[in-house]
Amino acid sequence: MHSYKHLYVLLILVIIVSISLSDDTLNEEPNQENQCAQYCLKVFLWNSVTMQQKLEACDKKNSQIAAMQSQLAVLKLKEKTYERTIIDKDEQCKSKGKLYDEVYSIRNKVENLLAQTDRESKHLVELLKQLEAYRRAIEMKDERIKSLESTLQINSLMLETCKTNLSSSPAALMIMDSKREIQAKVYESSCINIGNSSDIWEIKVPGIEPFPVPCDGRIAGPGWIVIQRRVDNAVDFNRSWQEYRDGFGDLDGNLFIGLEKIYRMTNSRPHELYIHLENFNDTIRFARYNNFSIGSEKDAYQLKVLGRFSGDAGDSLQFERGMKFTTFDRDNDNRSFDNCAIERNGGWWYNQCSRANLNGRYLKYEEDKWDGIWWWSWQKSITLKSVQMLIRPITKK
Image 1 (tube, rainbow, N blue to C red):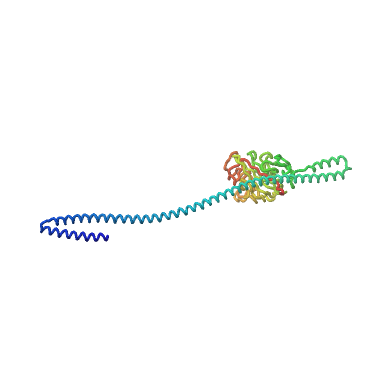
Image 2 (cartoon, one colour):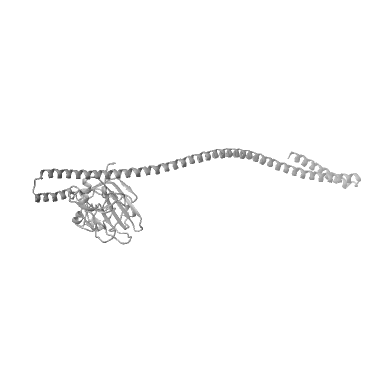
């Protein structure tokens, strides 16, 4: 810009000189020098203008170069920043690579430990099965020993009686022999000693005459007694108090063994309960309780003891724990405005009312019915194809 000011001053001076020369030429005749001066002036002016344009172009280029240099400096700074970032990322990648290697190594160790644990678990399960088999064998031996001890006591008594009655008459001896035969009959107190048999056996428990029971060794192992079974609609389970007390049905089919018998069995020694459930898709589930007993008729056969639950059907019986038994003619439930046995179509340990209805109305097809046979924690009130309730004495392990 400073050079432009000098150029403007020079240009003004040249113009003034040119005007003065033009005035002189008006008064004097043209000569060769004047013509040369004018020509030189024109050449000078043209060169000055051309030089000015080139200077302006040069200044413009300088400005562009300065801007480009500034941009280049910024780009170099960015390049250094990118280089630093690349170096940092590379270090991070190397660290992640090491971390991945460590994780992979740890995962391999965990997989090896899991495989080893699985093998040890299977081995442990096999050992537990063997222990269970040994325990069952010991239980059966214990039952057999008890039976033999009882037989020995009876035989000893018979021997003593024979010794004291050797001098009796033949008729008296015949009567004594018949009595001895009756006394000598030994009953099992459960199905434990019967093993895997699923036949009907006669048992004897304190407080009640001998009675037949269906044993089962197929559903959940040996030694179980079936106390309730539903397989079709041949037997109506909407029964009176007396019928539920004494029992009803067919020992080979639908049955309820009787509340009095269940009370006598579970009162004589601790029992466990197993509930076998099957739906109309032939899917089987179970619920098992490690302790089970009910009260006497004086207590309305109250569900007094219900132990720890296990199984895959869910626990639908705890809601009824502590409840008395209810039938259509004996209302012991906790519902004040009606009788659950009438609503649910069968006797049970109703609360208000229940979460299981195994003595309800048997339906030939799967339906959603409150008065049907169902187990709430498995498939709500959808009816079941068959159910069985079984009990077995608990023996010391």
